Length: 97
Image 1 (spheres, rainbow, N blue to C red):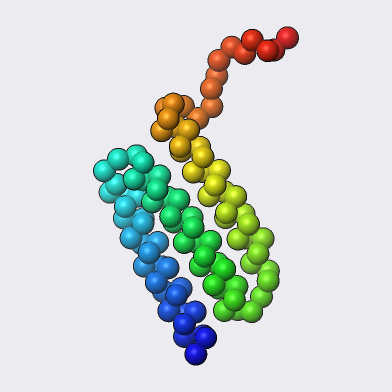
Image 2: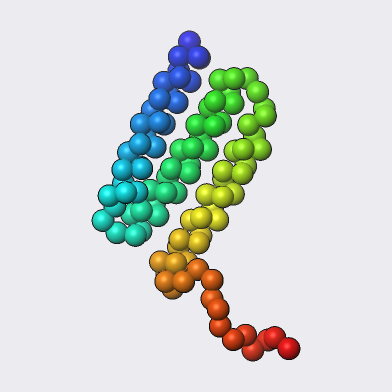
């Protein structure tokens, strides 16, 4: 019973990732694309967690943490790009000696 529920949840997450990938490509604006990319990261993280339960292993926990950290950093970089249209500022710093 639990095996079929886990397989159903993985298939629903695959469909969700496909829908978000379509929104990533066809999104009308940049914030829509950023939200779709963040949702893909969250769905991928959840899918790896469900696969970890399905395979009865704890070896995927490092991958879950890595996906979560990379998703967060990517979302923050895109949010900064939307706000300032630049990710890294290359200006003269007055604090340098």
